[in-house]
Length: 83
Figure 1 (cartoon, rainbow, N blue to C red):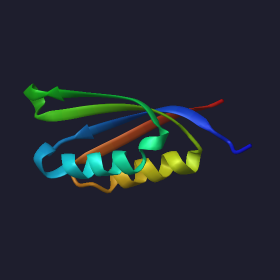
Figure 2 (figure 1 turned 45 degrees about the vertical axis):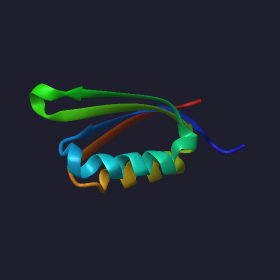
Figure 3 (figure 1 turned 45 degrees about the horizontal axis):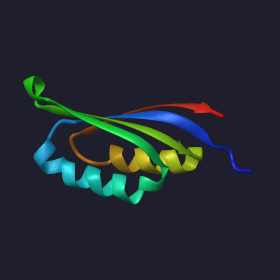
Figure 4 (figure 1 turned 90 degrees about the horizontal axis):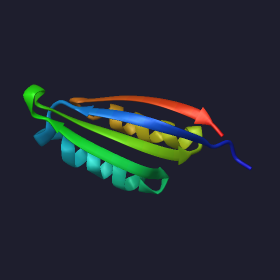
């Protein structure tokens, strides 16, 4: 059995108009590992914050966070618990 982890990924989008479509494209490509998603606009700071709950191998989670982290204006942090 492959090593799997359950985790939370925080995504902060600074430039929504330029980055949102690229973020959604990445999330769609990796949608099979996402078990929950919540997005909140933070108008006062002109930010959008997305939290993801994921269940996948560490390689799959790393592929998603790596892809998101390459998008200009996007900051990504994750925390994982092996189960």
